[in-house]
Image (tube, rainbow, N blue to C red; front, side, top):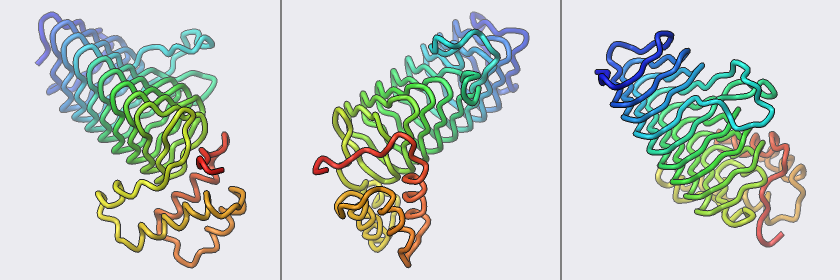
Length: 260
């Protein structure tokens, strides 16, 4: 299961069924759980923990020290969940002591070629990062988020559950849950209705979220006033709660509509 040319540090811990391809280097303090497939020419540095059934393709770098100039070699970590796919030339870097000291990646995420996830980022579950999508440090990504190719996300931004960005989008503010963002700089372009339909959302739920978008972006209310109005709504499905929470947690302000 481990190719003869692979270099595995004595302090690394690999489950018995983990496969490691030719010329891959696994450093100290790396743990790899069962069912993982590590391709050729991969570099894993630690402290890093990979969960179960992750697949790492050739030339990826996982758990390397971050690029933050403040980083001075402190023992920070990268923790990845289960069933993730990391394609060619992806770079996933550890945290810094100035923040969480940990970069956290959930389950069932797809990182296409050349994706970069910076230090101290938090990535949820079931996301898709298209080719060359890039996260600066301290970014939080919710569940089910889709980042179009060449999307760039500024540090400290938060992207709510099931939002989506178009290709070449430059995100410098928070993107609320379910909202689609596009442009340089990013602007809100509506709700991710097609994504809702693919998840078999009921038509009434889609309408509720679309009406919430109008409250946020078309009513002339401030964000705080929109939050108050949405919280007074008699219909409070979980998805609307996620949207409200993404507004409340925003620290950088949210992306605005092109008409505002």
